[in-house]
Each structure stands twice: as structure tokens, then as C-alpha cells.
Image 1 (cartoon, rainbow, N blue to C red):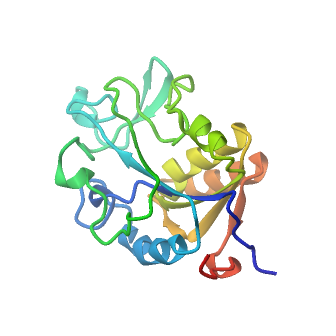
Image 2: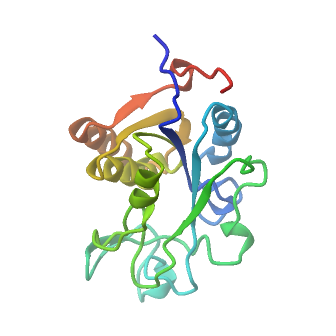
Length: 214
């Protein structure tokens, strides 16, 4: 049976930005392939929110901000472990822009995250210190959203953290797997799937959704 979309459902599109697509500073393999799928899905949702990584120069998560380290190393910071990344999605840069083919016309909100220099932010709901909220949960509650469908980049990081935090905030969460792509560092995809199972995040394919135009 197909999953039907209602006016209490939301499509949450995570970080479909130039730097996460081929040719970008931190490309997710085949990241641009999510764009047609998301554009198709968006036609069936009354509510759509996009997120956008928006880092200042010298961000804590950049390997270039630290001495004698390489990208993808993990270090300890004040809030725990932090993976270090190549400089990416720097504010006002081409890499930080949303993919040009992504249809954003019906988006209600573009939520910027990671703009605090000393805290990274994977999740759309809270930053990596697990204390600083983005305000998204309150925004969605005021609109009486109950169920969140997630798509975008990257499956094993920002999609993963956003989905799990959606559950913790009291929403139902379902990841549309064929509308996501993963960075796929060692063990990261398996860890994401294990956490989805343990936290109650659903996983679905877009052909299991009733895409009748609403």
C-alpha cells in the first residue's frame, strides 16, 4: 500500500548545495542525483523546508583551522568528538549556494545552520553541542506538522542526525533513501541505518509514496 501524503506532512530537504555535489569542496558521491528525485517529490508536499550549511571562514569543523591535521580526522572539542572537513559551504560562496537545478519555489523556509564559528551543526534541529537549538521544532509545531520525510545530503551525517533529532523532538520521521546519497566514511552508512532502527526512524523508497499531485 502506498504511503499517502497529508497536510500534516513535511518534506525536509537537507543541504543540497554545490559544495556537496560533484566538483564541490566536499562532494558526496553522486550527490547531484538527488535533485530530480527531490523535485519530483516536492510536487506532492504542501509543506517543504530546506536546510543550508552556512559556515564562516575559519570554522571549527575545517581541518584548515587546526595545526597538523588532515581532513576526515576526528578530534576532541569542548562538546565531544568532531570530524574535520575540507573548507566547505563558506558564507556567500558559490559552494554554499543551493544546487541551481533544485526547485525551491515552494519552500516555506530555508534554515541556515553551522554559522556559529565554534560549533558544527549536522542536524536541522540542534547543533553538535546538543544544546543549541535551531528553532525548527517550534516552527513545525506551530504549523501542526506531525510527520517529516527527509531527503538530501548526506545520508550518513546531516540526514541521519536530522532524522534522529526529529524523533526526539516528538515528530515521526521517514528517510526517503533513494533521494539521499552518503559520504560513506568507514562504517558511517551502517551506523546510520542501525541508529534509524534503534530510534524509530522509518526508511522508504520514493516509489512507496503516493505522489498524486495535491
